[in-house]
Length: 115
Length: 113
Image (tube, rainbow over all chains, first blue to last red; front, top):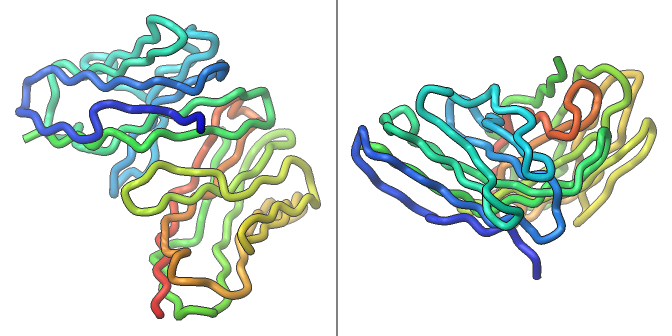
C-alpha cells in the first residue's frame, strides 16, 4: 500500500537548534508539498516542488527555513535556528497534479515542539 | 487570489443526526473542489471531490454538490456515526491555485453516542 512517509514523527528540541524533517513521497508522484498545521493558523502551505524543482516557497520564512528535494525519493524541510513559534505539525503531501485536478496523499506528519 | 471559507466549528452532534458543513469558495476560472478528512493523530485523506459544476462527489455516506451559481460545496451526511468524529477541510485546486490545494480553516466534528 503506497504511502507518504515522514520522519521523525515527533521531535522536541530547544530554541536555536537545527531541525530537519524528511519525507519520502509516493513513487511516481511528480509534486511534493510541505504544509504546516497549527491551531491558530490552520493549514499553511510552506513550499512545493514539481519534478524536484521548487515552484513556490513564498509561505516559508526565508531566513530560517529551507526546503530541498535532493532526489525523487526524498524531500527535506530544515529549520535553522528553530524558535518556539515554529512548534506545529508539519505535513508532507505528494500527488500527480495538473492545473485543475489532483488528489494529494498526506503523510502522518512530524510534530515539532521547540522549547 | 483563491480562497475557501468553511463554517466555523466545532460542530457537536448526536449519533444518527444529519450533518451539514458549509463551504464557499472564491476562485477565477473553474476549480476542482475537494473535501478532506483528518482523524486524530493522522494526516489528511481525501473524502470526496468534484471537478465541474453540478457534479456530486460521494463517499462513505458523505455527499457534496459543486454549485457554481452559489460558489458552494457543502458537505452532508444523513446519519453520522461516532467514527465520523474528525476535522473536515474543504479545498480547491485550479484557478490561480495552479497545481496546489487551497484549504479552508477546517471544521471539527464531534459525534456523541
